[in-house]
Image (tube, rainbow, N blue to C red; front, side, top):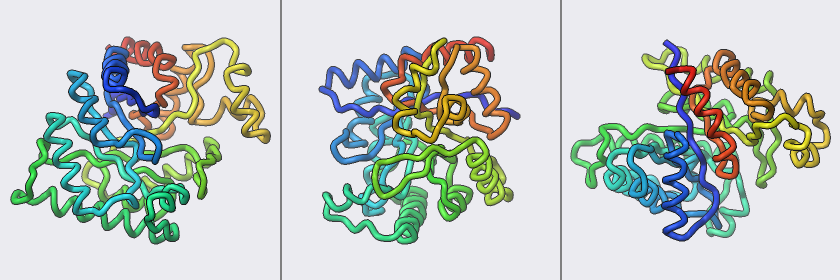
Length: 294
């Protein structure tokens, strides 16, 4: 059975208490199912921001996309997760990743390590959280019997870990290096990564939800103008190639809706996350998809 769509927005901009509550309420009004926060120095601290988001809204779930596992001791993280889930009324979705920005680890006085070491720490974190939160004796208790786990990443070892443990498999649609620079994956490259994940997950009793983080949204009849900054940052891309990237939803409303449906058929993505600057722009797409599914 095809999963229904779910839509999330990743909140990027720090704000006062009143401003934070207002934009979280606005996200819920626009139809977003999940209010998310990333985990970078200089941005909001994830757990208090999520508690505030839940207090400002009625139905929206809250989550991390994604926590930098290297910032956390797994035992202490379990306490944060359990408390946050309890204080949000069981609305938490926990997203984890290895982290990729060396400068943030240096600033925090934490080891960055090799890619392999970061994956090892992510695995230890996932397994320790499962052990602690899965124990009926553990205190504090989360509200949910199981806090849904999202794991984000493209490498084989992370995809294998995702297949073993995650309720949500998150694909960024980009390559990440040691800085914040991002190189988009083509449709065929993403196909290969999703197929690799599916191979690892072939023995699962229940399939995971597949998430894609969208980098650009513009409902417009002038895609060239909407993608001008992208083409300047990625001079090797033509406009046609940029429009074909899975992480770009740019064009007339009907074309954007059709692309989302096509990507659900091709990859299985039913959980889509957009970035805060595109929150309003994506709202008509949510409305159209919900109307067609009603």
